Image (cartoon, rainbow, N blue to C red):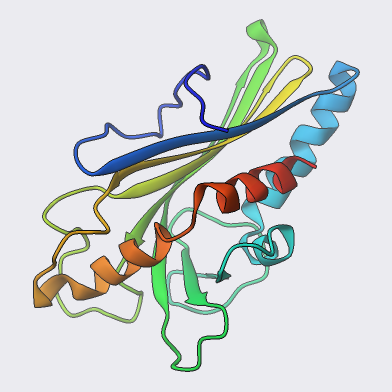
Length: 200
């Protein structure tokens, strides 16, 4: 569902151009202890990028976590990693890249609240050290996932900013535009499925 009530996380950047979206799924647990446990499990599911393929089968992309050298890894995501995305059924070895810009955990014991957020940006790949700009026309297209526990309430949300996937790119920026188009091809219901499955 679309949201406008959750407090915006500081990793969500300013929206400058193009499209934005804010989606969320929320559950309320029976006790604070249950909510604590669910938060830890949900955080683990969010950061294990390779498992996104199992969590949401409706998304038409395959996600593979790599380190900053492009080597496939089986662990939680770290800042500086990449997510390699390929269309399901792809037969041309076509891959696009998403950079893990930031991962932040915050705890607010005075208000019985904690959050984990991962901020992602479409990018050229780790092998493409060719001097191309990592941004298209200096626009910061991005997607940010946030899991928040507030007492017994648990929320998973997705926030896209500066979706310029309909922009015409110059030749020097076609790699980054292809990554933008691929990432933002995921529909709202597909992201909502992933949010729901991250919590449940």
